[in-house]
Image (cartoon, rainbow over the protein chains, first blue to last red):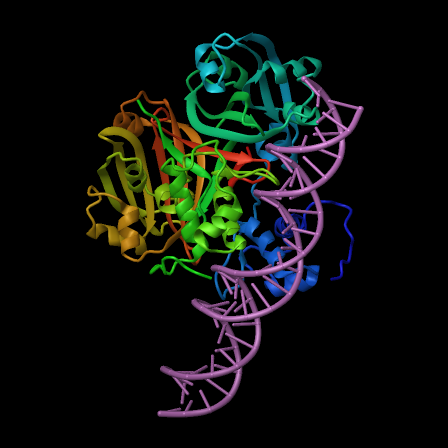
Length: 256
Length: 256
DNA sequence: TTGGTGAACTTGTTTGGACAAGTGCCGTTC
DNA sequence: GAACGGCACTTGTCCAAACAAGTTCACCAA
């Protein structure tokens, strides 16, 4: 088997391929609604076996970017790629991926005991200390989101050595070796409280889009619990699902 | 290869396996946080090859129900399975899957020309007629959501022969052969207007969670455009993502 | 007791082959 | 010209094998 470029990267082939395919789609090289090359063609083009090509395509399928069926060639369904873990977890990463400039103004960073509600969510004993950060995030200078984050001490203490006005907490923590691996996001709506209203420049009680997030480490510990409130006319959430592929999104009821 | 039960079903093996695994998890047979049997064990248990078992597990992985890594046994990450297409698309299906009783009161069903905004969203010419349905949906008798649906005439006309107070429009349409295959959902927040406020029993301007949906046919035509507004303390949306698996959810900005 | 080595086991990656099932096209036939 | 049949091509499914890479745990040595 002949490899044209003996890649330096140690990423598995199927992952490099799916990244390549994603890029071909987002760059418009493979156009929406148009069929992409057959599996056999992709095999010979990249010098890999069909299993590997299928593995790469399966990744795109599960994201809803590609559809297709038996006999029919696969078709580009959605030109907008789904977002990587980092892009979805980090406001800064997200902004950069859009070519926008993220901004942040830290209003408070404090260490205080968790109240009962927060302790319950984070699996701590009530009164155990957490590091709380309150920031106003902006896109190209426009206030967009109020971010309230709570970190466990072990993680949060590292933040006192970081200028939270300088950029991404997510990026800083990962560069420090904190292994954020999983996020659980609950999306609902909430009326702006006095703080939200003042920071975002809206009337108190205005509808805000809230993303309530729990961030887990690889071993299952909860590292962070946050409450992000977006101006709904500046950002929202999109999901696609099809009969063939289940969406990872779930609509849940809340018991009264 | 020996099959214990030569199944009558013509579903592919990997799909039957993934359904079985999903059921084992939701029934508590495989408990959250506990490792599940090794791939080799599952192979011998079900008399299939490793590739097939991995294909079944990949399905669960992409839904975030199972995690794992090289060397480590796969672990049940989330006991709540993701929702099928029907469960996520249909309020009635959703309620039933939770063991709750869905309710609906039709306030209006009308045929009128689409305004410019709606026509743009649905890819129609302004003034082309659509069928509009306004319903109040409830869970166990409690008002939960205001549903505003717009159907293209071809689909909507079938609704005049259906009692929209009797149950699921989604279910009725699919039973009539309408091929709803894809949904695009935009989630944001909105203040309650006068109608919402009265129906849901809240103050005008209260924050509501809005799901704005476009439903597509297999050939890509838009069949339905809806605006569902939930009481945020009664229902919301949850998504999980990990470093390994991209989520199908995307956070998008709105240009000012 | 502690530390390190290594074997056994696990999952991840990749290849190759075979068959089933669906689509599209071309040519034949009526 | 239209309908039919068959062929080429495509994707879906399934199997078997081999190696790479990480984890776990028992065993042995210091």
